[in-house]
Length: 335
Ligand SMILES: NC(=O)c1ccc[n+]([C@@H]2O[C@H](COP(=O)([O-])OP(=O)(O)OC[C@H]3O[C@@H](n4cnc5c(N)ncnc54)[C@H](O)[C@@H]3O)[C@@H](O)[C@H]2O)c1
Image 1: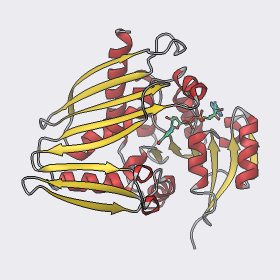
Image 2: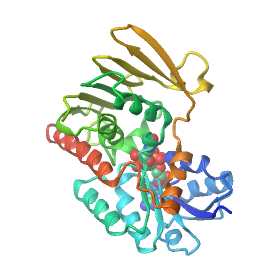
Image 3: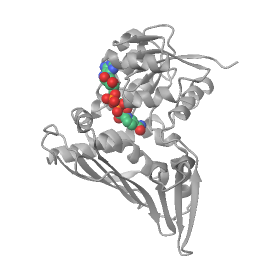
Image 4: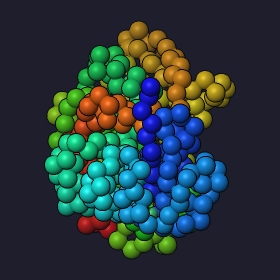
């Protein structure tokens, strides 16, 4: 019989909901607690997903003997403090990326996880569990487009809810918030290391907190000669854009996300594969969900039950984090 796990979710915002809605109905998972410092949000989770208890104090749910696993879905500033309590009470953890918001806190996070191998910690680099990205990685690693690879990665948000983005910008920059995914991807897809970083950014709207920026661009040069850039903007004026294109001497792979398809959106993402010199196109349909929090959580259970290593490894998580902290520091220095 499958073991049943009691789970506490801390942070009942956007990502907290992405976690609970893909997992709450599974027979081996019970959401025992929903925790949010804004208790009303936890109340909503209880109403929607039938959570047993709610609290505004994360220590209360982590210290409860009934809880086996904690999902940390708060903003990065609080991740390290919550992780410490999880370790104190021997709770396995799924922690959202980025692991925290400073270089020093990131090193402490890594050290604590390494010191406690009995506690399984998976950081939410969800693209590692996304079938579209997994397929693109396999193709590039198998030489489908040759080397060196050019990575074009853009994630611009034209926001209809500026206050939500501003509240994010009060705590974290666009590059650190999301860029860790793409610093990880460029190393994952090539198997090479980032050896040079350049970055620039701007505070283009006056209500963005002083000292932060709302548009950032980082370029990365790899040890195998590949290069790439990641561009992230939260703004009232940029157009929303999600570009993920990988090109090499033998061709190009471009991801067309389900929501950007003209038709058959329900079929999932498309990988457009252009072969050169044949000049042939192949469209590969990938059935997948955009945020596979269900598959990611299943992987944490496998780590617990079968002692599997985290994906990505903690070292890979930390490398991606360090790259974006470096880019962030460069930009903030020149603001
Ligand atoms: N992997 C992805 O695709 C993805 C997408 C979006 C966000 N994220 C990550 O998820 C995390 C959360 O982002 P979000 O967009 O859901 O933020 P959010 O603001 O929507 O939700 C965070 C929630 O945590 C609560 N909270 C904050 N501090 C708390 C504390 N100390 N105790 C209890 N509750 C607390 C807030 O009240 C809020 O409800 C961030 O680290 C973000 O980078 C990941």
